[in-house]
Image 1: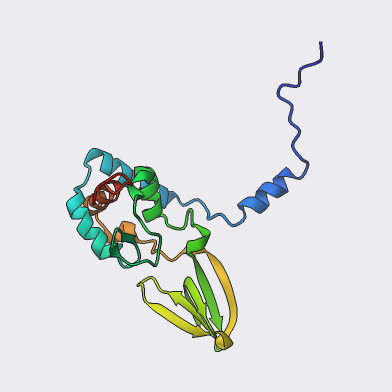
Image 2: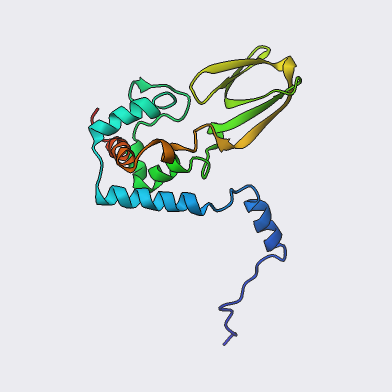
Length: 187
């Protein structure tokens, strides 16, 4: 009988360097943000919010960039069916928007030749212009000839301070509204 190979591993010799390269751009652990996520999930579990009140919060805080159905703007992702993501993922998406940023929604940073810096979500190029969308939803145009450097950020255009802008009760209401918007929900 051949000797057992259980427990042995044939990892490549450079595995540590490969792991370091793959994780180099990940954001550092943020204990305070993780605590906020846990607190908001627990608060929602204890007292789920009211979807009607959450719809008003969505209109005020989110619709400037996001659309559900025919309401809101199309700066950030379209949110039809967002409720399918579940509470944990929605909390993370809102309270820690830079944790898992889809490449299509990463900020673009422009360093201009005069030293000014501007950033936003890349929308399009129009001839000699680069068009970005600011977090307010407003589009800005920058002449290509004025750009010294252009780079993609690892961060989202979405503000990181929604935990500060909403009380736990308001956040629970927003979660109730978003969770009620699944692909099968009637609008």
